Length: 106
Image 1 (cartoon, rainbow, N blue to C red):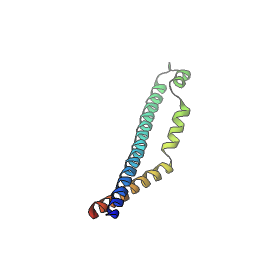
Image 2: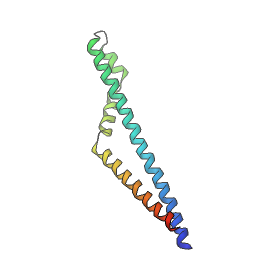
Image 3: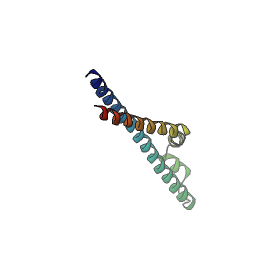
C-alpha cells in the first residue's frame, strides 16, 4: 500500500514538472512570435525608408530600440535555446511515459 501511495506522489510530482516544462516551451514560442513580428516591422520600415525620402534617420531611431531588438534576436536565434527546447520536449515525453506506467500499476 505504501508503494502505491509513493507512486501516486511521484506521479503528481511528474505532472507538475510537465506543467513547468510546458510553460517554458510556451515562453520560447511567445519569444519566437515576438521576434518574427519585429523582423516583419523592421523589414517594412526598411522598405518604406528606401522609398520615402522624408522619413529621417532620427525618426526611424526614435520609434525602435535597436539594442532591445538586437538582444532579443541574438537570444532567440541561439543554438542554446534550440537545445533547451529539445531537452524540455524529451523531459515531457519521459515524464508522460512514467506517468502512464504508474497509472497502469496503480
